[in-house]
Length: 194
Image (cartoon, rainbow, N blue to C red; front, side, top):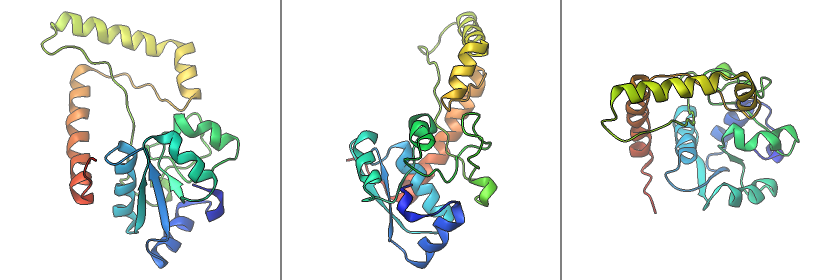
């Protein structure tokens, strides 16, 4: 969020937004991106009208945030952590179920009363369909071993990335649940790819 708004918590953002609909704007790296959909979910759950300003990438939105032409961004913590630490932008909350190891001083949105809001960027290792189970198992073991390495884990955590040790089955379930959740947000928002 740009510092001009003066909000230091979620309520200081939401209450004025309810009082003056469409006064606030949020930028995203483009229509239909996960960060755009995070903003749409936020609008729905908070019951506020915040105008979406799409850009052609995250880098294009930053000058407008710094110059206060837009009110806020939904961004990945790993991308914005340096800006937050430098005091260039104000972080109001993380959208994960628990606070980040990289910035434990930033509360979750749920802690601030927005129960059920969760928007997580995640990365996974994919392989061709019908990969033989022994190869799947071996790849999963190698990823687990790598992410369990204390040096690698420490570097990921310091950059706002929380390594999750999972299984192929758990990943399939995550993909299904995320597709269903965000499909509803896309439909409700009316977003169309340009």
